[in-house]
Image (tube, rainbow, N blue to C red):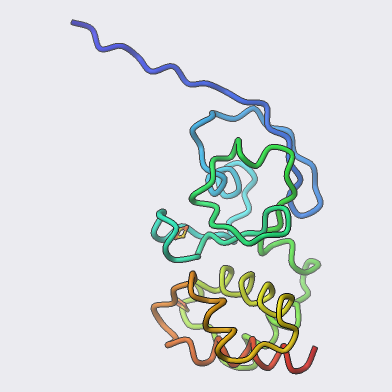
Length: 162
Ligand code: FES
Ligand code: FES
């Protein structure tokens, strides 16, 4: 017997990413992370676990931090997305990004885009977050290198100086 072929469905997606409007005809099965990295060439969001556990793929969708590996691209229709590339003008750093450098908070760097985005959200939510609030806010972001202390320092210091 001949195996039946699966037919790919397509969707006309419209969304705004980092202030730019995009219209793309996409296969309905691709994830938002694939759209950002493969179609739009925004490779700041990383894939590590692909299961919503590590936070390396964190982006902002309509004002909320989300794991882009868990969202279908079609679910982002008519939304506003910000990726790490959209957090600061080209060749400039946010205060928090500068603090990650000053506080020696980066080792391999793979988790850092997600850490920065979650850190910005924590500072926005709490203004001068305590270390406990920072730890709780980073509970969805895993780092295999730093031991977290210097990441927490950078977020705490940025909050204090904002
Ligand atoms: S790659 Fe999305 S949470 Fe790990
Ligand atoms: S700096 Fe390497 S995983 Fe965080």
